[in-house]
Length: 373
Image 1 (tube, rainbow, N blue to C red):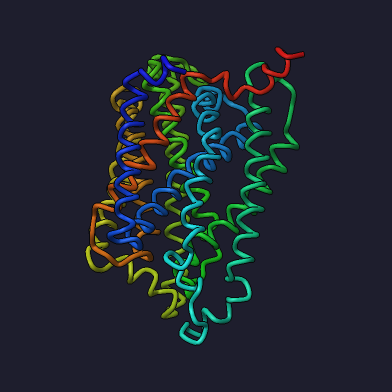
Image 2 (cartoon, helix red, strand yellow; image 1 turned 45 degrees about the vertical axis):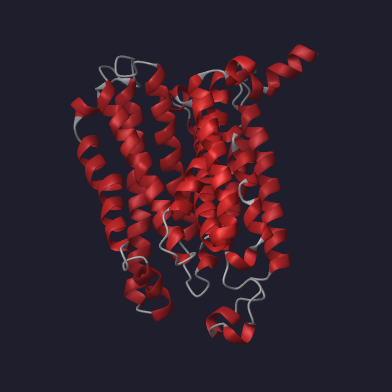
C-alpha cells in the first residue's frame, strides 16, 4: 500500500482531493448552500459511473462479446467504487433543507402541485427509499463482481436479467428522489431511463480511456475480420450516445408538446442566465463532435483518435449532469464551491480508482475464497 501511495499517478489526485476537501469545509462557513450544491452535483456524477458500469457488465453477461471482455477490468474497478459514491451523498442527508425545496418547508408556502406530492416527498420516506436503494446496489455490486471475476465461467444469465430489473427500479426511484425532486413541480416518466442511459455513456467512455491508455487497441483484433478492437468499442460507445440522445430528445419533445408551465419551467431555468451556453457546450461535446468522429473509420482506428473520442464523450457526460442538476440548486453565481467540490470529491475518487486498477485482486472475491479454502 505504501508503494501505491508514493506513486505520483495516485498521490497527485489524493493530494488535490485533500486540498479540495479543506476548501469545501472552509466554504461551509462562507456559503454553505453553494458548497452543498457543488458537492451534490459532483457526488451524483461520480455515483453514476459505477452504476453505469454495473449496467454494462450485466448486459454483457447476457449478450457476451469481445467488446465487453476488453473493458471488463476497468468496469469492475468502477463497480467497486460504488460504496465511495454512496458515501459522497451522506453530507447532503445532514442538511436536506439546503438541497431540496420541499424538505423542512412550510407546506402552505409550496405550490399546489408540490403539496400533492408531499405524501411521497417527505424526509422519513425519502431516507427509507435511499437506504433500500443503497442496500440493493451494494448487494448487486458484490454479486456482479463475483459473477465477472476472472476464471468464473459459470453461467449467470438469470442473475444478470433479474439484476437489471432490480437495478432499473432502483435507478428510477433514485433519480426521482435525488434529481427530479430538486424541481419538485417537474414530472417526467422517462427521466429514469434518461439517467440510466447517461450513466452507461459515462462509464463506457471512461473504461475505453483506461483501456486505450494501457493497450494498443487500434491493432488488436475485433469481433469481425479486418475490424480492430478500437472500432468495436467505439461503435458501441456510439450506440450508447445515440440512445442517450434519443432519451433527451423524447423528454424535450413530450414536455414541450404538452405545453404545461410547471414542466416547461424546468427547461427555461436551464436555458437562461448563462446556462444556454452550457447547452451549446453539451451539444458539441456529447453529440456533434463525437458524431463526426464516430463516422470516420480512420479516427476509430487511431490510438489518439479513440482517446479523444472517449474523452470528449466523458467530458460531455459531466456537462450533462452539471446542466441537469446544478441550476436547480443554489442560485449563487460563485464558481469556487463547484471547483472545490470537483477537486475534493473528484481527486479522492480518482486516486482510489487508480489504486483499484493497480490492485484488481482486491476486488476478486472468488479467488480469495478459493485461496482460503
